[in-house]
Length: 181
Image (cartoon, rainbow, N blue to C red; front, side, top):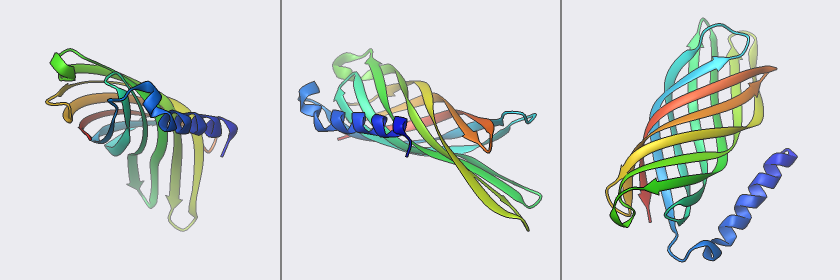
């Protein structure tokens, strides 16, 4: 694990342990997302659109600030005996603004953090290999909270990775449902 990842993980662990210092009304949450991902590899022409899905979980310290961890599968592709897949784990922070009464109704949000991506490649008759990298990610969303416990949203995230000496970009557009407890 590289130094940046250790520092970031330590910061989030400390934030989680000191959650009572932020707000007494904090809540845990779990979120499922699914949609489309546009994968592009530097130095290669074209891109691939694929299905993406993920699960996020974290802690809302107050109605406007959360820390989260997540897993996302950005997509996989198979063609002519070769296959590739990109997925990753990440940690980050979320900022949110509700426009309805009592933190319900329409909202917008933004998120940023670090993604530990894994790119796996398999070629029939030759073998397989994988490469990992840690890069920042950013995202925005808009949605509607039906209650303090449940909301839905549309989200756009921009993720970067390095794989075998080339840059990989995953731009995702997802629909998500979040349950807070």
